[in-house]
Amino acid sequence: MKKEHVLHCQFSAWYPLFRSLTIKSVILPLPQNVKDYLLDDGTLVVSGREDPPTRSQPASDDETEEIQWSDDENTATLTAPEFPEFATKVQEAINSLGGSVFPKLNWSAPRDAYWIAMNSSLKCKTLSDIFLLFKSSDFITRDFTQPFIHCTDDSPDPCMEYGLVLRKWCELIPGAEFRCFVKENKLIGISQRDYTQYYDHISKQKEEICRCIQDFFKKHIQYKFLDEDFVFDIYRDSRGKVWLIDFNPFGEVTDSLLFTWEELISGKNLKGDFSEGDAQEQDSPAFRCTNSEVTVQPSPYLSYRLPKDFVDLSTGEDAHKLIDFLKLKRNQQEDD
Image (cartoon, rainbow, N blue to C red):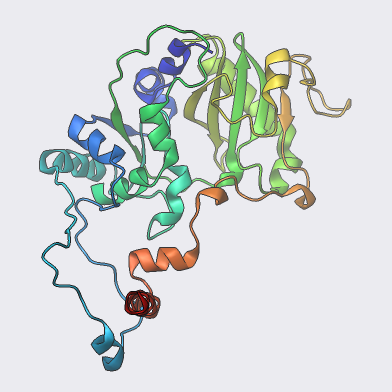
């Protein structure tokens, strides 16, 4: 995998070519000061947040009296930077896309940070929603700092221009998403995207799904992308229509899901996974899905989560936990 292959998979490179096949989107250039803010390792303070977190239960008078808030002039107050011009552009773009968007950077979406959002979703309505997800995401940080980490060529890293990608929010069913692997412009493998779950309809309709994806690939994707080796994600809706979702580099930087990269690169064990009675062409791609509930696995994003108590404290959602925490800190200070 070379750096040019990674560049060809950034959203701004492929979206103009396949606009009619995918979800309506808007790309906004990312100002340098916004990039600096997103990469700042300081305390998470979200710019543009209008309403303070609501308290689930009111504190009693006794508990309120026991809390001693510091007046120390030396106490630093964290203030979020403001980006009024950029915020206006973002809100106008969000409004033009129906009021709710799915955000991403050049390559990645903050899928590892969905747990921190108040709605436990990547659905965003304001710039502050987007900042909260982006500043909490390792995937976004990797886009900024290590976009060419698995590339084999030793040429200097190209100068990057980053953009905020806003995609019209659509309620996509995870069981209808698939990842497709292409080598030398040939579709060699299709994997269930949400491989941690078992979906009965995929097992029952896999031949039909495979044919549908093959037809879409041959008609719209084959020989039209900038490289001959690549990965693309699709969504098949309830009517059987296929939508293009994203492109990814053909290499270890992309999750191979139910395949291994050794299989995909070597071509071994990639024969069509259908019975002999199925009328499949010889060049049919290998199709893999989770075949039973026995093989269901935990979500790969679980390792990015924080304990619920910590989240409750950080958001102020549980007033009693916050009070107990402050009491504990006061007692520790008195003991010292």
